Image 1: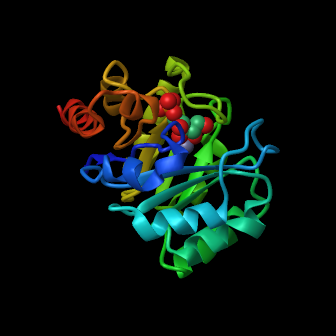
Image 2 (image 1 turned 60 degrees about the vertical axis):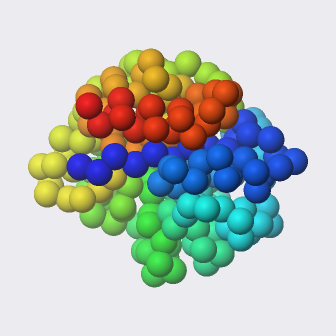
Length: 217
Ligand code: DX5
Ligand code: ZN
């Protein structure tokens, strides 16, 4: 299974997004967290800033929409050119229709679950998605601790994907660092989002490489 590293720019320096994105040219994607102050109690950035990021990012953009009513707002992120658009299961009204719309725009479609949201009600939908995101912290803020209690859900999700013979990626987001990446990989994750671990490191590029090799072992 391919190992994919998608650093989150949430805790990078927003006054120099071009420079901050250049630091992660060795990653596979740039993970961009869109928050609306309703689905989560925080406000980050929206479509105009994502459009600017798309113009200067050295790697494809992996948009994580922590917003209400993704049915209405998510397709614009795919249209703008995000390579992957992930919306939350808890917020979507018609997740299958939305996933099909995203794919029709040429984007990968991702379904995100909060730590307490079970995967089981969504297993039938797996063929409609390119990626499942199991949140390993409560969405809203960077710098929180990895919740070990999400590991069994990661394992169950990977088992279901394998049993169905699907090539669905399994992303983890929140508290991913050198200390936790192997646990997540062992449980079955193959896409790793790391925000503070990468941007608080002295050498962000080296941190990306370190996470990749730990996840690959
Ligand atoms: C949190 C965001 C994450 C966040 C991760 O709600 O979805 O992408 O930036 O930050 P760290 O890696 O610091 O937990
Ligand atoms: Zn995220």
